[in-house]
Image (cartoon, rainbow, N blue to C red):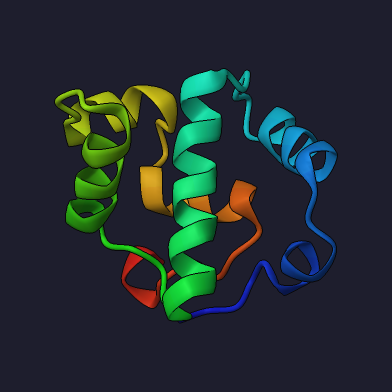
Length: 97
């Protein structure tokens, strides 16, 4: 994993996330926060960034809705994992680089 978000990882908070999202031209909504916190929780539990499939399963379990990768791309157009990790302040998997 590339730890390109190490600075954000150490001092991350919602204001930092909002600033990163603004630079990424993303207006954060409740749905974005669900994804961001799902990524953070998974990372800090397993010291690993979730794959797209795992992230979808986590979100479906939490929201009790069907989640698709297409839907996640509407939230994070440059990649739900890549942009999601960047905004969440956790390392981006090398497979996303």
